[in-house]
Length: 543
Ligand code: SF4
Ligand code: SF3
Image (tube, rainbow, N blue to C red; front, top):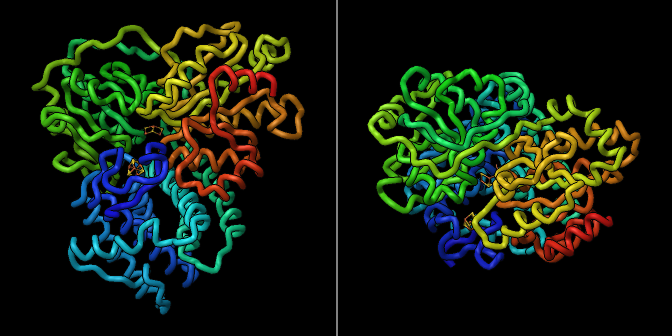
């Protein structure tokens, strides 16, 4: 077996990618990512064993976030960039060991490598399969994937200047625990819930960072057509990149469009002032194949999800920044103040044709917690009068599997007295359907990016309070969540931590859940997969 990865929903046969990733990740990249995760475990071991205060580790904290983010599905396919990060992290690890007088011998904290070859060879013995017991392996990976998602959200908050040292301390605790052979399955289940607790903290921190800097998302109609100017497409989740791109393009005659998970940027008041911020082009991440061709202008990836470009023409227009990377595509660095120079992208845009129109019209979103709570009276009245029977939280990810048509069909067949609460790229499966409204409340309420699932939790907790209920599960809310990558894992763990039960997860249950771990999740939390649209709607409506 040349590689092993089972961290995402598209993993081969739902058991593991072993020759090449379904995502396009090759063996070399997969192994280097395994080694980078292992190096982070080594740093974590040193921090935990020497009881070092994370507040003193500024550079290391940030590099740990970036390293974990790099290993998220579809974030970085660039072996050279990952090797550079490994070298950097090992240097920091060794300096930390010296400074803290670490005298342990945990391999992750002490191993050395001196070439690409030695890295690949080392990686072969430290990947996912290094843990032999399949239940322990499953729980360790569940924790690591949750932490990867947490690291991504924490990195976005960091970029806005918001930090919470307790999150870094937890990341070290959690990553170090995955090396600790004395921990039992029960210990790891407890740590899984703790990961969810920090998931809530991380999403709350990012929410605070985004809204304090860019204002509270508000109801917004987003244009999905095009204008005739040259243009740049920006994808991913990082709003500081969004801000800098808008600042640098204003007055240049170059328009800016969002793709995929960047769509919710339109909902923030701070970005509405830019005349060249035109709209959203296309759909969710996997539709970039095709949509990037007809866009014609340069594309900036601020995070996942990158699909390896099919033609050199498209590849030649792709730029990355932050943790994102693709071989041959420039990665635009930040200076010590976080400033990035996007002039190369802007100059390229000026020489290229304007985008082809692929749709016209608009979509409506911006229903994050502040906006929904402003409408709370209306929502509560509609529930009391019976105009709204049930809410369906359908947050999460989209993906290319045909089985995801389930979500479009599910949205179409839901009774007209139900409301869909969404966040993340999952929304593209139904956000352009004509589902109407209930007394002026649209039937699809988009809170924003996947991290804005936090908003949906805040809304649920608020409704619980308004209706005077003891348990969030007594609300007329059903959870039918679509997952793909590790950010969805932290969203799921956060919901479990908040006490939400009976979440249905699809289109398949994670391949990394061993039968026993899956059983614990089913028995303790009522987690279930999906069935047919008809059966599931009937089940949810009668639950
Ligand atoms: Fe396979 Fe997903 Fe891992 Fe890519 S990220 S190698 S598709 S499991
Ligand atoms: Fe989508 Fe990749 Fe997960 Fe942020 S962009 S939700 S899949």
